[in-house]
Image 1 (tube, helix red, strand yellow):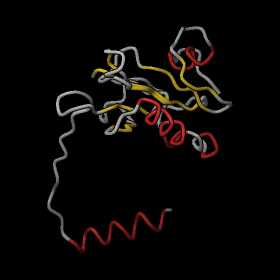
Image 2 (tube, rainbow, N blue to C red; image 1 turned 180 degrees about the horizontal axis):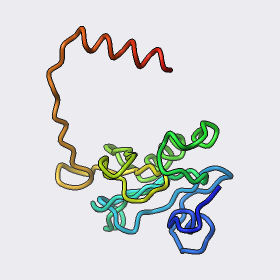
Image 3 (tube, one colour; image 1 turned 120 degrees about the vertical axis):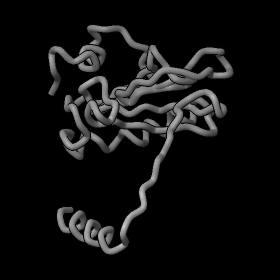
Length: 155
């Protein structure tokens, strides 16, 4: 399934050129043209950035399912099985010792393209690559246990 207006679907079809890293029946991976760091790949994903030491260029790879869906919950399980193995292979191929695999769902969560995509973002040093602030919140253990039970019952 694809969407005629989706930029990632157009890349998969070959209507828009890309620097393809991998393709199978269910997955397409390519280099992000606006990387955060060298090696940033998208398994149908995108991020801007850092330098890939061997080539002196930023790298981010995107890894995407060929099945069009805006959010992870829209993609059938069988179309997700190759995503992480491909992202892992890209990470190994870049030689990145430290890296992030990022996937956003919805505008508030910073999703820009409405097609599920995973970013493989090398983190070559403290300044390049993805920067994350992870603010934590205090919680009540009884409330946390109730939430745990609720989520578990729906799985």
